[in-house]
Length: 140
Image (tube, rainbow, N blue to C red; front, side):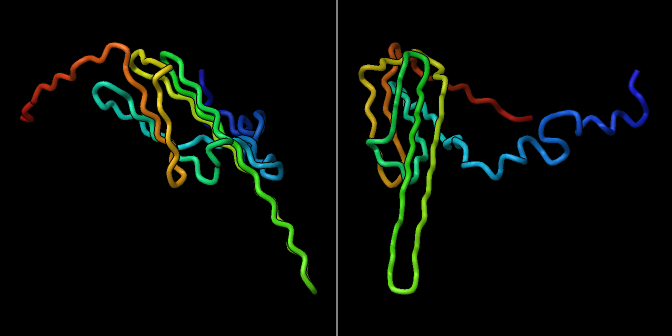
């Protein structure tokens, strides 16, 4: 039987406490972020668009299996300037990762990837493309 006021101490019993999960880690290095992605069914192929801002194409690791796509990338940059009267040092680091399950089997060997303006676009042909049938439904 549940008590009328529940368990007010419960948030303090779990990692993160009342401030959310992992609030204490805000002082650590940034974590891997989940890249935004679009999966488009284009008939005979799937098109996958993933945002990878600031990550050069030679730092991207793209893996395609018959049922999934995995994208990982990492970028770092350093600014080290010294001039009379000031010193400017800055470091940035970013890492993205995304894995998508595909609804139909694809041909991994024929996948093609391009990167343009921080967006990775993959074209992956389907193994047995099925024709999309539509049925119009009238609202009452």
